Length: 261
Image (cartoon, rainbow, N blue to C red; front, side, top):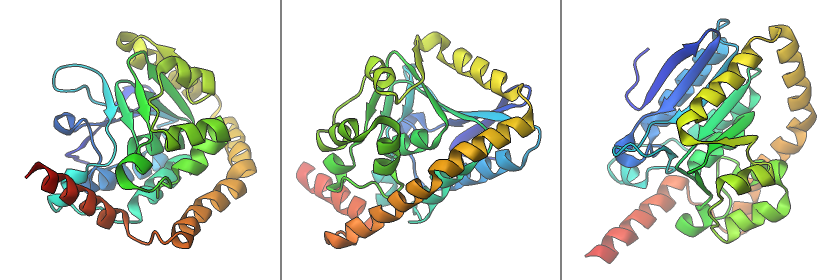
């Protein structure tokens, strides 16, 4: 299976990795990248030879680490369509998968990219990571349509969730671990190796036992999560925010372009 915006590899036995690979745009997520992610995630889920997997970003063009800058607003303006349902579809598929997933974050990690990371079972961060949720800052809505408030809340609690969204705070590696967003932090040059070692440990466990454990844990929190994700849609309607993400993003891009004229 060929891809343009992601790289799918098998870095170790029973372990797969997906790399967001668009360094010219800081691995920003366009509609085609989301469609490729959807195919890759489904392929991993269906592959009995994969027992755990990793999600990371390609380095910047100058070699500095980068996870992803979030959704690529320029791509929408350039005509690369982004279906409204695709973001929630991919994040929910990652969340529901009964194979351990580890998001490996370093450098820029923002907004839509954070929604992907929040859907994973674990997050490991590099010391250069800069984590942000700028839905409110950039799009005028603090309710990310892929479920970020619900996943932030279940992971780090209400106070940190409010701070991240309402103040556009940039979270450091130390803060990521302290708040519970990340399991651990590592130096950038060993981050992937540490994540791979963790994935290999889980991949070596009894497959049936891992599925049972994940199924039990996920089912215990699924009702609350699903209710919160549905509530996000209702809140947008209650407060008159009925535009699709693409419509809102186009307005933001057009306003920026007009400001440069």
